[in-house]
Image (cartoon, rainbow, N blue to C red; front, side, top):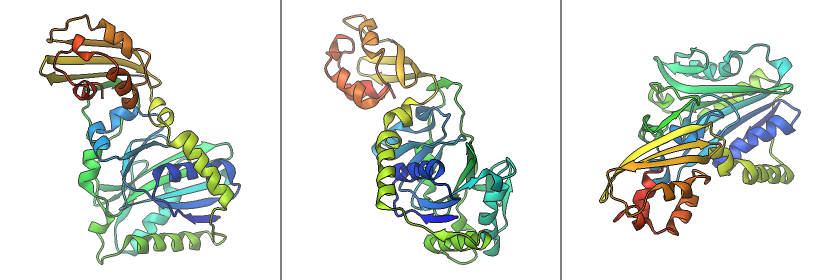
Length: 326
């Protein structure tokens, strides 16, 4: 088994690394990483429906789609992520017990009554501190999970607070859980780096063949290329969202403006605009402008900046208009 601790806090890089290990390394792998503040979206989710778009934009939080299903999670420097990538003969079941057991055992050694509850959640006193997901690719299985160690809970709730009325779709929805940090339950203070060391040592004791591994320059370059071509792209993180309908109403100096968008694979297939404003020209023209464009702020900003908005929305700024489209 290759045992790897990431030297990067970049979510794009760390998620790309998981894919590289799954698809390009024959050996079993154990991978640990900590991300700077970011949101990780399940593969089958509608990204915009899972995030507080305004908060994410204001705080420049990266949004990344992962390979596995399940719900959306918030990562920061107080959240440890662990990943097992194993040949399938090592994994005989379809549950999450095998590769969450090492985490539970370390916490139990620290005096905590940590448990696997439901299908894929780890809990303390009935509150979730870890969510887990898995996938099978050819003859290998990947299982990864989060560990809330000392995360900023206010940031977590703010980043994931979204108006449920804005979206109607059939995408997998995240389930809101009562969560907790491990650090709040420890009988003695423990630094995250020391906790990481305990996890690694325990996994190495369970897998005696485990050895520390560092990527070669060629491997690192390959992962960076995967970041550039996939994990940092709008197409993967937003455009891969399932079909959805978006609606939002905003109050402006011109009156109330309501936006209704039908979006498929990130592209606006149709747009309708209603409200009690008094346009000089029929808004149907701007509906045609929006149709066929990606539901992506920088592109809509560029297109709308070149239009005379006063023809439809008197005294409404470009920023106000964009706020109604996300």
